[in-house]
Length: 267
Image (cartoon, rainbow, N blue to C red; front, side, top):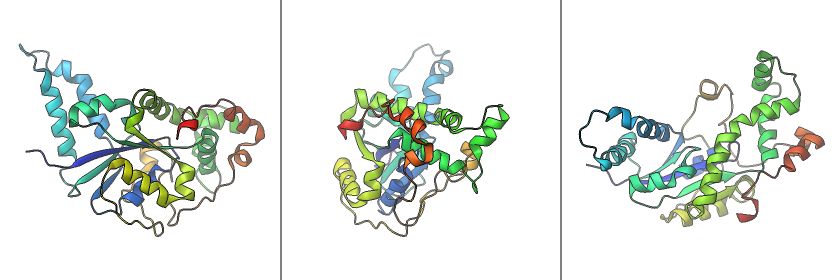
């Protein structure tokens, strides 16, 4: 028998505040906010291999895969007692029809966003001493010159898939998405939380914005080769220098002039 958990989804551009937003929402005892989840990957793999699994069936049953996926959603979080699940994956914005078919509801997906030069600057700051210089280690292994242009080119590979997924959702399923800008989280987290509760249409909970902790730790070094991707500070505040200062004026303008923030005037 399926449980009565409510599923909502969290996605967004890397380095745009989804981890801190998740940690705040997890203060609500009714909400389980996951770290980066493999639920999407499990379901996607099953969908891709379903024809292979059922090739010897004399009679295909179209609803069989949907029913199986429905039980995967439930079983994946069967160990969680919280009635509300907030599952995090960069892929969800592009899969609105699939979620709707599986859960029989119109999905609600929170998407955190941030200007691309700011995202690149955030990655580059993780690369600087005394941290592990993960970008430089890769460039040296591949005999690429160490400079910030090449560092940004390398980092952008982490952004391609999230941006593509987000754009698909934005262009086709805009009403299913709530966009939250990184600067909103930093400057007015209380208003952000109000927006989230209004969007999800769930009872409000009084949150605190200090003494924050990560609700679900992730092994960033093992998963991404980068330490510190999902660390958060106990108090929400912006401590990083401006992106133009980190990237330099020329590189900053290069990415700024590309105008990749397709959502910018529609928050």
